[in-house]
Image (cartoon, rainbow, N blue to C red; front, side):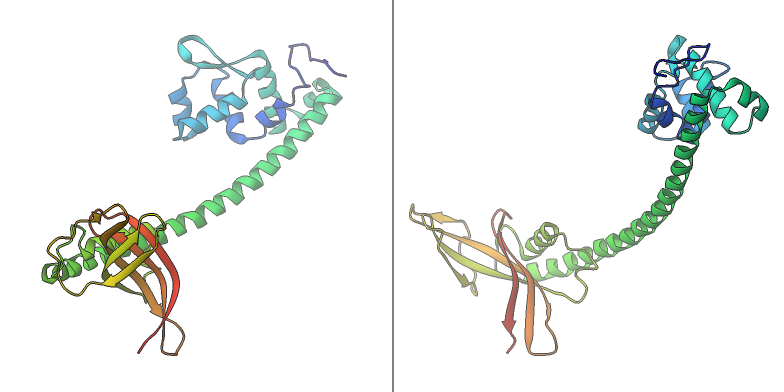
Length: 281
């Protein structure tokens, strides 16, 4: 019946009991604080839990069974002692005959439910452990890719810096800097760049400020100034067009996976083009 309680005041109707005792770590917490109040850090150390957030999560689930005693230490409430007695009985720490004598039918049903939840929690824990192992392996592979990518960027920076020194274009954002901006913006890494060709072309752009219509001209000669010009109706500026491209099939085609337009004076991404197929002469 609703509201039934054993003699010591332990409420068997609290649904929270199922969840509180459904995790082995929380049962261990009840055992640790049953004899004497124990501090937060001591509990973490004894349980081998590094995360304070995870420790606080378990303590919140034990609300009503564990209380904060003197000096911030944790101790059992009366309901916590009864809950621990139930948990110990389930583990076989108490004689079966005594269990049959002291437990009411309602509490026996409660214990059965807790056992079921504990079994499900154990299976879930094993599945999570297997998933963590797979994630750790994936993290190691990603770390190796990132290391290769970092080395690739370093090699590319060294090569392009030599190209920049020989380049006649003295834009504020050099070709190698524009390439680095494009790769970072597009999220490229060593794996996705494998088999691709990275190129950079400088364009002179005439843009209508009202309609945003623009015309691009390939720059072949150095300019006296690369600063943008705005006469109110038209805006003129320079931009780098960085492409990451690879061969498409066996025919004379080139598939430009992605192209990035980058302002040659401030490094701003102005736009991008995807899947531009070009005929290779």
